[in-house]
Length: 327
Ligand code: BYC
Image (cartoon, rainbow, N blue to C red; front, side, top):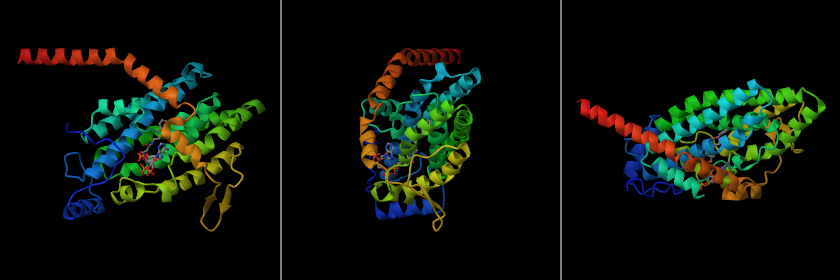
């Protein structure tokens, strides 16, 4: 099948140097690459991997928040959270569609997710234990997602870049709804402020891990930056996120759980403490606290939705047959 071998972490490529140089010249000239354009296999595979992982993250990312829709404290909070989770479903669908333009099918990507072969963001393997987590997830997780995704609006691959423009607009609403929840708690009773602080304590380190390994350990960054899939390195984006978030925590009167966090005048940014990379890799390799639950819940949702997919196909078939009969 056409898409065989497309999914996977292998970004290696076997084209002639002349072909690669011509392709690189298009990238350097900031031309968008479209699905029917000639492209190195490594470029195609890198995009299928990254867009697929990104789509899975959006879909799995619905679970920790979906868990709180029925327990939101007010109707306004419920409506906003419901809208946010629906947006995430939509983002997953744009992204699966963008990946499909590269010759891989949605079924194959889903199968990889369900079998535990495909990765999704480490952050969604942590539990949402309190209502404050709905605020912190919006503030930090969506905040980190925006920092990573704004540059993706300029990704060299057209369908991914275009999908990201809408996604980022919606992420911006998500970040604000989260920050507003944390603000209400941080300015509330001492118990509410304590909930907000406890939530920040649990989500801070996993959020800064979202940007991926340090640049020196990032196997794909150099090639992805050369192909302008990534515009900033993992560490550059992590730094931007920390610098933007520290003043937000100060405004809330909350303490970031990193005693080594200090302003570095010379670099014009914050220095931070050591990240626990053993925890990161444990989670990435599928041993996060909620990993098993997330995949079980996704599989169940896919199985429970089988009748909807069958009904939609039957309906489309009926319409097609009617149209042919009328011609
Ligand atoms: N979790 O060479 P590297 C969201 C993997 S937000 C799991 O640096 P790359 C949302 C990486 O895949 C989250 N795995 O890789 C927010 C690679 O493994 P493979 C989704 C990670 O691709 C709120 C290996 O480590 N956002 O959706 O150059 C609510 C080496 O890393 C992680 C995106 O996906 C991680 N955190 O850079 C709802 C954004 N970090 O593939 C939803 C698009 C690294 O070789 N993706 N790994 O087996 C990207 O920008 C890049 O893929 C990354 C990693 C910066 C994440």
